[in-house]
Image (spheres, rainbow, N blue to C red):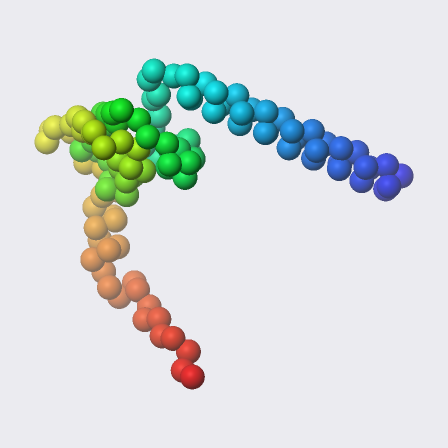
Length: 117
């Protein structure tokens, strides 16, 4: 019985892999044919596009004042022409104060030493 269950799991894994590969291929085709691509700044799609070294004519970031710097790096790498929209009256990035406190509090950082030779 265990042998049959194991074969079933192996077959499922193969189908899942083929399905993921097929969906990935469809995703690439749609992306290549698109005139406009919209995404959130911290989407895994942006990470995939950066890894694939994709380039777009323009990157437009709405509510840019609300994003943290690291969130903007991925989208900004996707084009040489960028438009960032935001204003000084927008809400600050979420947890910006907490992040500033963590980065400013050096007591939270433990010294790291290389092992002696």
